Structures are given as structure tokens and as C-alpha cells.
Length: 239
Image (cartoon, rainbow, N blue to C red; front, side, top):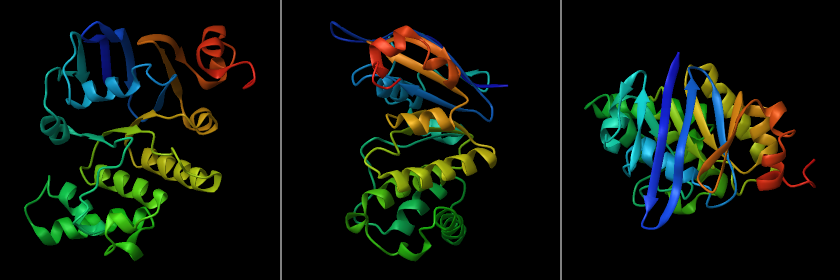
């Protein structure tokens, strides 16, 4: 089943074309990654999917329903969760309270939202720092908190924007395990990431954007053989 279908999305900012006729499918249960140089249009694509900005052309379908033009609250309600490259916690709330906000989507009961938030924090190995304020967290724990806030929405599709950026190799391995566990629980993942070894080991499929155009969409084993991808992003040294 196709969970997310992007059909010929184009986005212009004045005279700059950020995305040009980009199409892709994300199937249920996949981890699919979007990679490419800085400025390739990756985050713009996420902003369009999540409803932060409108495309100039093209359509977006979620579980077969046209959601083009939905605002972020609507997409959150129907099962699309999202993290941001720059973490955006509520700084005056504790870790637990931050996650509880997302859990309130499905309940008005504070006790239920607290229980749900604690389950997520336990899954992320953060229950011992539930009363800490985000300003006192490490980079890794801020990333985990951002992920936890998205998981609290109980999404069927999770958009992850560079959740492993800035982490050391050991922390990246921990995050890879978390993402695989999330997938095993039934959540489909669309991932933007620059940590290439993580992308290649996690992903079922990889999309490569360059100057707003899709230049590759296929398996991780094929990507390292594609000359356009090598020239635009990987470089000969990667091989």
C-alpha cells in the first residue's frame, strides 16, 4: 500500500525553483530516505508534505486521500508526524511535559497523556530525565526529545529531518536501532539525512535531489553505482 504519494510537486520562491516536478511513493512499513546537497530542496519538500507551505503545482496524497493544502494541524490529526532539523522544544516545559503536549491530540485526559508520554520516554530511554528542562539537555537528548514529541502524535507516517546530525558514531548507532524499532511497531518513515552510512544501512529506498530535481529513486545498493549521484553528491572519494 502506498502511504504517501508525491505527484509532480513544484515550488518556486520568487525566481528560484526549489522543487521541479518531484514525484515519489512511500510504501507502508518502509524507511525511505531523501538525500542531496544543501539547497537541493529536501526540507522544502518536508515543509510541503507537512503543510507548512503550499506547492505551486502538483498534488500530495496520504493513504489515497488528497491532502494538498492541508495545514499542519490537519496533517497531525490524520497521522503525519514531523521533526525539525533545528529542534523546537517548549523551553519552559520539562521533557515529560513536552511529550505530553503531543499526546493530548488523542485525549483531553491529563493522566492519559502523562501515561502515553512516559511510555514514549521509556522507549527512548529518557524516563530518568523526564523532569529536566530542554535547555539542559545534551544534543543527543534534544534529538530524542524532538523524536518523542513527534511519536506522541501516534503517527502512521513519520517525517524525520536530520535526526542524526551532530551525533557521534555511537549515538548514531543508537538512533539507527530506535528507528528500526519504530518501523517494527508499524510506523512508516521518510528520512532526510546526511549521515550516509546510516542512510544506506537503514533505507529500503533512497531518493536523491539535486537543484530541486529528482535524479535517483531506488535501492541503496544501486545508488553508489549511479554516476549522476556520484557527481552531484557522493563524490569519487566516497566510493
